[in-house]
Length: 259
Image (cartoon, rainbow, N blue to C red; front, top):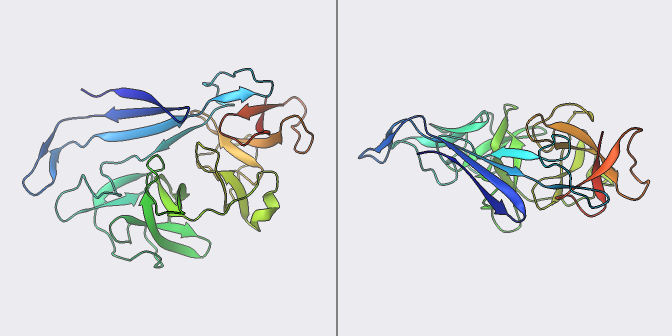
């Protein structure tokens, strides 16, 4: 029987939904017959108002939900596919297929063009093979972080890419350089310089770096770019009619502007 589970992870709510369209039967070659369950995992972050009062965590303006690690197989471990197949990233999910064999750090032009456990992620001048990870498992090498990123074809994957973070300050977006911005990339409030998005405050978004520098992508279902603000100071004020709302996963003194 399939069901949705909820548990607490570092003060946040982890929601795991397993959809089982049919049964699965192991085969002698290590594969499976029948439908493969699709696993969807999301994080729901608490939000707090500037005066300490709790805000409804179901409000699309003051919380964030990130669907991660969706697919019929596991590209990290390689499990879930028939013998002779690889688990590769295509579009938003992981599927069974063949890979191109390119090794870590190699240039690539197809999302499935890299060897097992790797995918072709977008960089400013093309694509590069980088290790695939699941943001909840922190299975990257020491000193690396798991960040949701875009594949070389421009699609947003629900899995992550292992990379070395470039620490930054949300109040100093210019410190990341041209065409980059400072974004929060996990539920612990960690920040890194990432390629800048183009979404203006109020526009819809999906990835953590879909918005322009100075805005964050928040929301449960209809995710929206909201402007970053400072609580108790006028350093980064909100527009008229907006209130600076604290997000539980943001650094102390930082919030987002909401109506």
